[in-house]
Image (tube, rainbow, N blue to C red; front, side, top):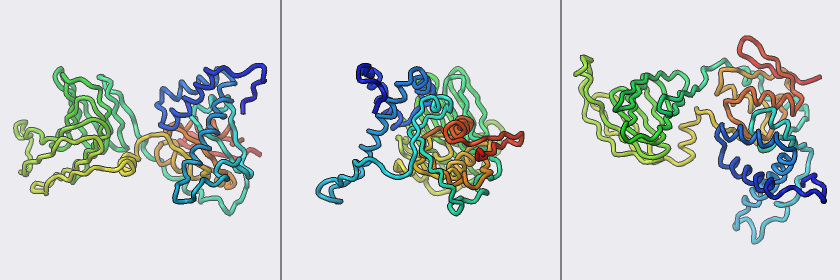
Length: 350
């Protein structure tokens, strides 16, 4: 419920904007929308109050949505009962803005039950090369998985990039006059304006279309350029629609390409390496830290075992390590110590 005085009601425009932000969060925010949301929160304290109110309503609707007719004739009244327990919910707009992490709900259970503390070695995993993002000169956005190598060869009539190794996702700027081609070990993936993922290893080229359509074709023989190539059977791949994946063998006499239509869950698993919004509900801090460490070069280390069991419910971008650290500092009383070794050590404030 809003803290606004009865004789000073919150303008309807603020309530509508708060409701709209809840819906936008539910389908996921872009980086630009995250910045816009945080600026909206910081501009007026009533924005945070209305945001919290609409989030509570949305949570109750989601709870009701979990009821199914086969469970009972009528929904259990407890589904809409006020939550009980020792959860402490935080809704400070200033904290959200300062954290630069878009959070739906922040919750903490400060029970220092050491027996629940996960192994700290999870949080202290060795550093990994981060996923990187590039914007090409035509506006195409490329996300490169760790270890991927890409060479750009744009001309007036064609936008060609060569994936020399690894995996990359392309969100292509539409330009019918200049087709966009990803070359990968003798295979060309051709698109005009679409989004797709290409993975190259020693044995196969894998193409997954996430938006639009692409054509996978065999590139012209490199022999004309003086490069020796192995003899191989002609590769024929139908036009791929959104949600379809083609796996093309690079063996000289391989079987036909394997085409499959993936479910949304399967697509999510294929693209799990990309930075995205991470959603946690009552998750131990150690679990959240492990997710950040898996996707970023900067590694978070939980120093005090009691912190590992602290539970958080939140939603944030997986590449926003600094924003998450500021969040736990401001909202949960955690002290962060940054080192030159690329680590951020998390201590419990004494």
